[in-house]
Length: 504
Image (cartoon, rainbow, N blue to C red; front, side, top):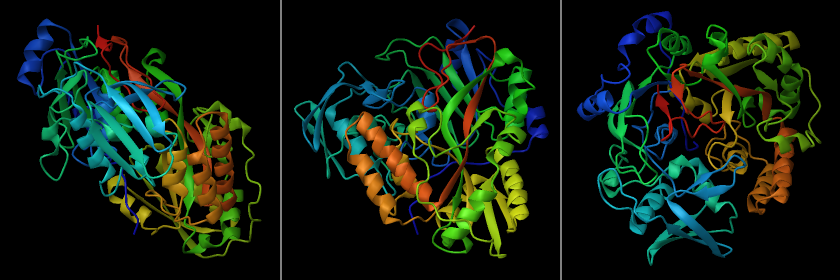
């Protein structure tokens, strides 16, 4: 049984939309936080945001919940990434590679945690060591042996093997640096322990979160008084919140809802996110390469793009999409098996309801595969209730919307996590020596053109197995009320509200 990682639930729909007005604090005064209430009235409005997915691990930075902490600008990392994916200073101001396995990071001075304690090298050592020794590890550390030492006011990071991507890895929100009190129990508690522009004051389970402005933020005083976040898994309800004025910012507006909003309320951004059909290569019908090839030949990706995504997506030629322009240089499949006649045995395709389009994709695939001669049944649940079965190989196929450069700005971590024999998110149960070798080669290549070429070679090796059939590349549709200024439309889904975001 492989280690697991996460994603989350769905809600009602119209009923949720009708009751949604009670879910959000009014922009400026109503809040779960006493300090937020008074501050919001006299100095900047609060921002009401409808988040797509509730937390699955108590907002632990060691889980995918870390990306909420990052999007709220409450937890920070040693480095951040620019648009090209290059590492830039954050809590660390500079770094040097002292030998092929060791990096030294110089910390920013004058930074305090939200509990008032100063940022020290010991704090960084504690946070990164906890992540490196977690079970399971954050996916950015899949296959990486990492040790951290506070030394002479700086931090030394050493890897078991040469790793040119260490600075980019340390930009992952799952490697956020928190105050000592966050680590007093078995779980990591981010409430009041970050360094960012907003202080997490209340983590309201799977319903809401409340954040206030950090008046002592090292990066300058935020324009908004705070953030009132509510989790609204149902896409129709999120869009309704924007239309009704009960939310200022809405994550991930479903394609089906985009046309119901004013054009000046939505922004469409190409994402490094691929909608992929993972085929179980370890057992069942798709253990046979010819059957996998038959499934691939039966899928009409253009029909999915036009019919379900209303043209708001891009048909996939590979795992990596147009958000990475250099991916267009790919070779594609070079040694894929020939399609066999469908076996006639029933296959089960799993997917989840949290992303509104996926059940529709599943239904369309069911028909396409039936037309090709397969017998198909569907198993569709909330993600929280289906992920463990997917990772344990209990489906013949699984449809997943997967970010390809979510953590490091570099696809190598995704290729390792999803397709290497020791990957922690290997839904395809793939164990192919050629894939393992190619991904290892990509991981060890220096950042730059040579690394990009090696990554495309690894992609080719994966495509040749037909263990994963990329169908389309998504575009994120973010909803902003017209009175919102400065929200971030981030293809990597790391940023959303920053010091410069406010409500007029």
